[in-house]
Structure formats: C-alpha cells, structure tokens
Image 1 (tube, rainbow, N blue to C red):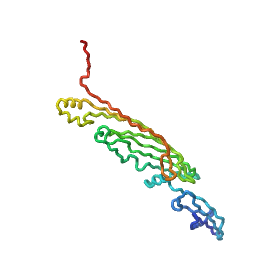
Image 2: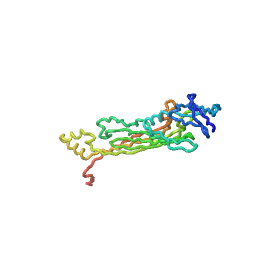
Image 3: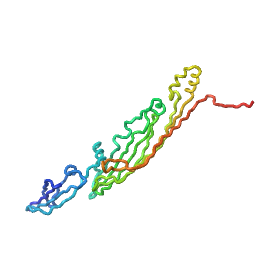
Image 4: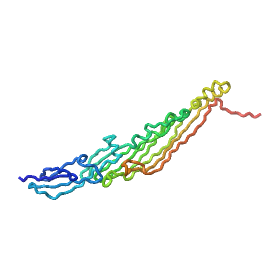
Length: 287
C-alpha cells in the first residue's frame, strides 16, 4: 500500500505547516482570528504538494482577506461582545453576520442638565432642554456577496415643566465588505421629526412668590390676596423638531459621522392669564 503524500501550508512566507494527505488530498483548518493579521491587503497562503517519494509539485497561492474592524465597529465590540455575531451560513454562499450598536456613546444629553434660574423654575421646571438622544443601528451582511443592509432607529425628545415629549425617527442604508476598503458604508440616511404641546396652569403666587408677602399690606394686600386666589397663568410650550441627514463612515478615522443634512428646531410659547370672577353677569340699565 502506497504511503500518502503531504501538503505544506505557509502564510505570508512563514514557517510551513505540513499535513498528511489521504485519498482525497490534504487540508488544513486555519483560525481566521489568530492565523491572519487583519489588513486591507490580502494574506497569501502558499500550498506545496509533496508525493510519497518526496517529489514536490507546483506551488499554488491562495489569497485571503481578513479586514480590520472599522473604529465604530471596534467600539461596539469592546462595549459588548454580542455586538457582532455569526447568524448562520449557506453552502457556497458565505457566512451571515449581524451587528448592532448605539451611537454616540455616551448618549447625547444623558447627563446634561440645563441650569435654570430660580425665578424661571416655576414655569420651565427643574430640567429644560433635549432628552437623551441616540441612534440604534442594526445590520446584517453575507460574506459571500459582500453586500449588507442596515437600519437605524432615532430616539430623542424634549423636557420642560417637569414633563417630557418623545421624538422618534428612523433610517436605512447599505454597506459592503470587500477589497480594497474592507467594511464600508456606501450610503445611509436618517430622519426624525415630531411636535407636541405641553400645558401647565399655575397660580400667580407660585410664579411670583413675592406676591404672597404683600397680602398683609393694608388696602393693597386685599387686592393682591384676591388676585392670588382668583388668577392663574396657563402656560403652553410647543417644541418641534425636524431633521434629515446623510451619514456614513469617515475614511480617515473609520468612525461614523454626519456628511450633510438639514434640520429645524422650534420652540413656541404662549401664556394666558385667567381670572375667576364669581359674578360674571354684566347688565346695562336704560335710564
């Protein structure tokens, strides 16, 4: 019985790994994460067969791409190992990969609090301004085709008068995985819009605490007391947001960023002074 030959496998000219052959040939299983250095240039795998008599055959070179993660994906993986995962494969058509991340990190407005002057706190509340804002991105790609799709969900909002409104939106895009740039977002868009009205009603002495002290002043105090009891201010604040943008991957930094777009933020207010008059009947006598 003839002894089987061997085949050697060498990555980028390194020390060869020799595998014993069988009736169907010889093979070697590489660990893509350890045996290849991530690079935008391909690694070469040189394969040389040798028969049982020690005669070497013609060498064959196979090129293998192992691309580095772009900055945005590297940050996501460092934050959570489940951000990038294999979701299955199809025979002869590559591996299916999915990923998910939130940007920016930390979220905009997550720990921000606008300093409100004490005299405006009764009207605007303890917190005034945008709510925590971020984009959730999910995508999937097949390594065989090298083409993937991504979807985005935008969460934002506004806080005023100790109440809040939410603004939401979405977006989509396509990207590819292949030479010469590796992971590359081709185009992506997002939009967010919303409007709401927040209404609160306040007694005058809550908005102007000094009025309460004047109630004990002779003559004038009775009028101020009546005003404090009978008058109130209805305050309406209507924030609105409309944004559309094109975003993608910065070629210099590998991070995500906006490439252009337009937006509009508006804040309208309205105050209505309401006075409760017990006898609001008005009569005119003809004399």
